[in-house]
Every structure is written in structure tokens, then in C-alpha cells.
Image 1 (tube, one colour):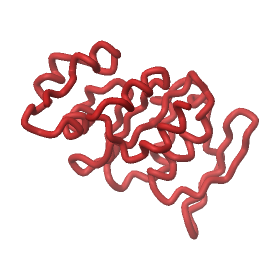
Image 2 (cartoon, rainbow, N blue to C red; image 1 turned 90 degrees about the vertical axis):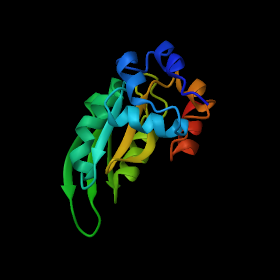
Image 3 (cartoon, one colour; image 1 turned 60 degrees about the horizontal axis):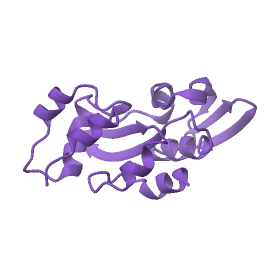
Length: 164
């Protein structure tokens, strides 16, 4: 099955279609091609996060990529023991989040901004080249992506709930 570069280009999800065509390997499963594209920095809203990056270190880059109201998200305090805890401020909402890893941060941010149409949902594509591949996707495009066999994020259930 050929990787659907045309679909991604049509949805304006690629930064450079020609460069993407050079990264994709047609003999690989399509979800691997998506990981390669994210790692190469060719997906709009894609982030490649090195192992060892803590949630409090990622939050600024991630909320910027999410866009909209998420850009005003603030971490007010960080406590490290016994579990990393973030005191966050989002508009008038102040919460304490225990975030043991990056997946927990992604989950909490997706939950917080589930109903915000101007904020992109974060898909956890998986691990590739010693990094976690994340993709911030416009919620209007998400239902069409979820029907594609190449789009198989780890947090698909949360993303399915986000589109409803």
C-alpha cells in the first residue's frame, strides 16, 4: 500500500511534499512512514521529543504547537517529589497535575482543551529514532485522519473522544 502523500498535502499537513516523498519508503508499513515524516520535521504541527525530556520542559513547545488558547497556558510551579507535579493556569482554571511522563502531559492537555475548537489535538504517533513523535492536528481534520489506516496513534481512543 502506497503512503498517501497526496492526502496529507491536500489537507495541508505537510511542510514540503517533495521532501516528504524522499523520506517515505514504499516497502514499509504506512504508519512507519508517518513516524519518519514527523522525525524529519515535515509534518505541520509535528514534534520529535528526545528521550529524557521532562513534561515541564516540553510544555512550552507543545502548547505553542497546539495553538489557540493553549498558547496562554502557564506552568506556575513545578514539584519533583514524589511524582512530578505541575501547578498550571489556563485562563481562570488553576489545577495541579501529576505527570509521570510525556504521555500523561499529552493526555491532560488534550482533556483540558477538548472543547476548544481553536486548539489542535495532540496525537502520540509512537517512538522513532530515540524520540517520541507527537503530532498536533487541527480538530476539523482529525475525523478524516482517524479513518485512515496509516494513522494509528497510541492515544487513538482519547482522540476519538475529542472529535465527538
